[in-house]
Length: 288
Ligand code: G1P
Image (cartoon, rainbow, N blue to C red; front, side, top):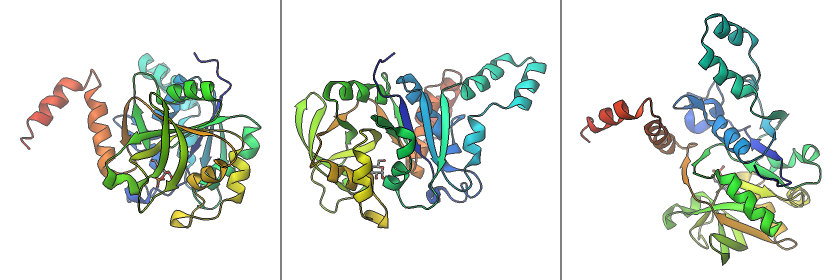
């Protein structure tokens, strides 16, 4: 377990999930299942496995299912106990006992940067992690744990990045960086959803931020999509603080996109010992 000073993780989860309508009309996007676990639980488990112990979830209207999911469920636990379904009981108890949760609400959909800004009073004056739950990262060493190691070495902001095809880069925040160590770049510039991407190094939804981000966010004007963008605040911050980017090791799925969501489901199901053989047979039989 890491001894890093980073203990808190922010999960912005206030978006409407319009890309998954109608599924997300009455349930939060974060609760859509990948195999049998809600999307957000993958990130929370990664946070825990990276040594983080405080999860701050930024929610909004219609998101109470997330709070219920991470709460204890007395009735369900009692029922499983009575029916002697001890394995299921343990699994359910594990979810609520994962870490400590706090919730705050983003009252207006003003963007990712704004969602981070409203956690200011919960963060105090310490570096913290941010997880975008849509980005599922399957890795031997949890991606955030890899980033914490980079943070502990450079004592600065660390952004997760991954090389993407150049024609996809306009869908992301993109950095221009100078390589300083294997997988580590000093960020020279960064831009959100660029028309002319400065490189193919796209920002993926894992960040370690310093408290310096808050004054930068306060100065940030609405950018791409009319929203307060975290990338724009980082661009302000770079004039006063070093920012590093880290090319993590692992497979990333954009589960916020229909195709990425399907790919994640198939890949993660194929990793499950209880599903693998039958599912593989089924996929092979599809004769595509
Ligand atoms: C957000 C960030 C973007 C980043 C992306 C990663 O964009 O603003 O910089 O590259 O997440 O998934 P969104 O996907 O919310 O449009």
